[in-house]
Image (spheres, rainbow, N blue to C red):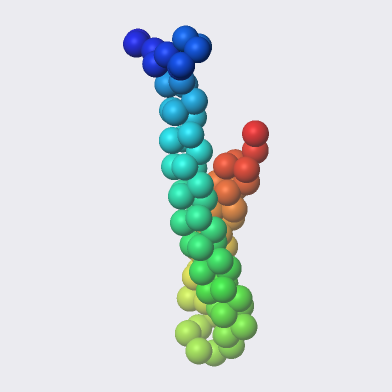
Length: 84
């Protein structure tokens, strides 16, 4: 692996450039996941507020559990991105 030399002949900076790129990628992904998490959390609130008579209790329960699982998965992913 070739290294870029600074004006003073310092060590290569490829590792720093690679790290910066990874941070940019993680930030972009975190932004997308945060928006998705907010959207799903709102949807869960709406479903929890819906009367059981609108779609049947069993249908409502299945939808609620599916959305809750997706929100929990996204939350875990977000938390993983925030850990050092």
